[in-house]
Amino acid sequence: MTKYVFVTGGVVSGLGKGIVAASLGRLLKLRGYKVAAQKFDPYMNIDPGTMNPTQHGEVFVTHDGAETDLDLGHYERFIDENLTEFSNLTSGKVFWSVLNKERNGEYLGQTVQIIPHVTNEIKSFIAKNAKLTQADVMITEIGGTIGDIESQPFLEAIRQFASDVGRDNCLFIHVCLVPYISGSDEYKSKPAQHSTKELQAMGISPDIIITRSDGDCGEAIRKKIALFCSVKEDCVISNTTADCLYEVPLMLHQNGLDKVVCRELGLKNKCVLTPWKTLVKDIRSRKGVTKIAIVGKYVSLHDSYLSIVESLNHASYACHTNVEIKWIDSEEITDANAKIKLTGVQGVLVPGGFGTRGTEGMIAACRYARENDIPYLGICLGMQIAVIEFARHVANISDATSGEFEKSDSNVIDLMPDQNGKILGGTMRLGAYKCAIRPETQMARAYGSLLIEERHRHRYEFNNDFRDALTHAGLVISGTSPDGRIVETVETPYNRFFIGVQFHPEFTSRPNKPNPLFKAFVGSAKETRL
Image (cartoon, rainbow, N blue to C red):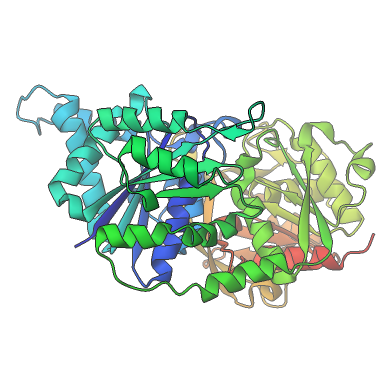
């Protein structure tokens, strides 16, 4: 029978519930258990697909094409399991489903209420994911903070679910802040106590409390929390700030998390930490610095590019170098100042994005990288920028642009034909698609394969009306859909590394298995001497 772990958070948001859930998942996997993870987000959006990245961070896309919360990226990177559309549930999706059932008469005229109709919908989602994955342990993170109005149906649902499956098969973990007060030079347990009591007032008594603090809050504080919150002393686990995310599983293991989880759930397997210890050793043994510029329009919130940052880190582990990121707002770079802005960088990465804002700056950065032979990686919009820049400055299509920016006769990038007139939400090319690689290209050398599969999230494509003109001018189309119709990757033949890809390779990178494209990019940047 599947065991269930629910992770909640208290006091403040942003404590790292997702990292705790992901780290526990990795530790249980190192014990030989099949683990699945899911995230419940209380906001009313159907999914994060139309949310501003500067508010919510990146949208993580699963293999089957679901637009999900960025915490699912942590789950995939730590647990190394592909998640699905059943791995992320929002209030919007729950109410949408319930209301459609009501309109279709599925409730047989009942008065539709939060209990039982909304809570039943949430519980069925948990059960469906457990059945689909056949997991030994299902880890579910409840987004938001205890006390939020919108999260109450989810908390009530998991309270009921624990009764449905039996308390021996269910475990509650509560992550809460233990703040340090510099004036009195001490950690304070009161916020954790109040948060736990609020959770208990909703009928959920946590089995484990994770204390989140910058430093070790001390044994006395943990004992006090255990006493006042009615948990076992060894079930109050410290989670302190780590230099690297991937050190957190080892820290939590050392502090006893997986041991008490397995004890409480009746799981017996021993933990084999060697593979993860080897990874952390490789991370710590890196030497030197490789400077990469990320030129984007959402750089005010670095979480907007979370998977890209992590993918660069993964590549740095394999290339034995430290990656230093220089964040450049694409609205602040021009042809005139590109040399100054990009001084000292050994690689330029232009990530995905939507809308026309900041795109001229991206084009300027792309041009500088191409003309000065600085390794360039363009992802999604970054690939489209590379095509536009090449069209303008090499193929002499001076007014080349994208249909996303303006309608003209020179839209070298344009809307997919079947997307005309569609609404924005959920209408993009999403999820994994195969890509055929042209032999003896930079792409072929990077991947070591002529057929790959990567995840997409976009509406606009390379316009085939300009394929002959651009290839005649020297642009290499190095990857297409297997039927050759859709252009997936482009590159230049005379640069050491200059690749634009329509897909998002960052979504498939793992700390112990870096995406080949990022590895090749960082490796090339490492060798670049300016």
